[in-house]
Image 1: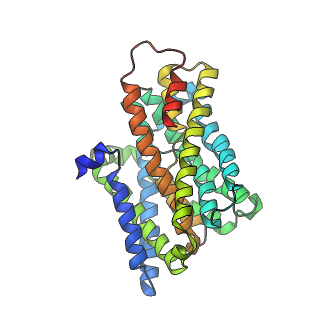
Image 2: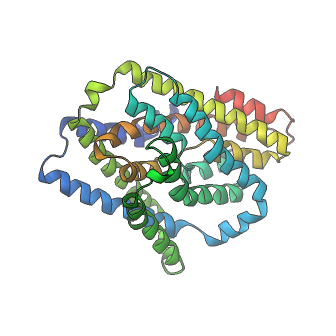
Image 3: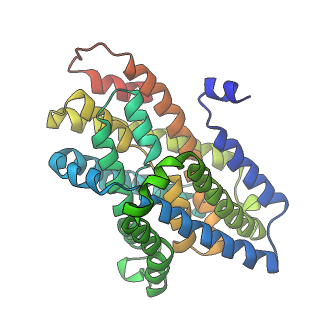
Length: 335
């Protein structure tokens, strides 16, 4: 089964996400169970960000300053151009309001860490630069994504309430900083057990998804969202991914980056983090809306993995001497 999923470029974790949504649809937490599941989910989010902080290498971040032009390009794609594309999607009529907000929200998120680095490595790109870009993106996203969400979705920057600031600080930022400060003492342990801790990451997200979708089901999400709308979300996700890859390739060529650095821009600048997006959605939106908000992100997450897996293997087989048109070929392959 796992071999078949790998051949089809389908992440087995997607099946767990779908199963979690199904469980929440059939047996959402109610009554006292809602408080228990919500409390455990909050603790899981704190643990998730603690581990993110412990994994972040200070040396990698400092080394990344040297390639500031590359990292600034990735940051511009992630937090400026992607949100502009999201605002364009926002203007498309015929999408259920929560799904439309979810599509915009996913464009405001930081890049992934593990998969961005993994695909860069597979494609024989600049792995060290990918580590720096992805790490910086996730750290910046804790601050930038809530601000952009307040500006574009929940009202304006002044609508970024004190409650949201406190929740982000206590539930996300404080565990992150604590984990990073403790890295000299626990870093080797985290590195030795990174596979087991990776399961902890994913289990935390599943728990949050169950809590979020359970609340959404009780609010009638499946009566509001049609199959046609979900199909439209998939089509728009593919369009967003192709557009950002094309723009990123054009920028890489314009700035004269090496092929290895262009690969970093391609994979770090086009990805959006499920691991960061789900917890942030739980903090920034009412519980009843979170399920619909993260639904487009779940679709986009799988689409980006499938497309990038194909591209990474294709790019890895390139000849040693690259043509000037190489980035355009990468972007065209994504469409």
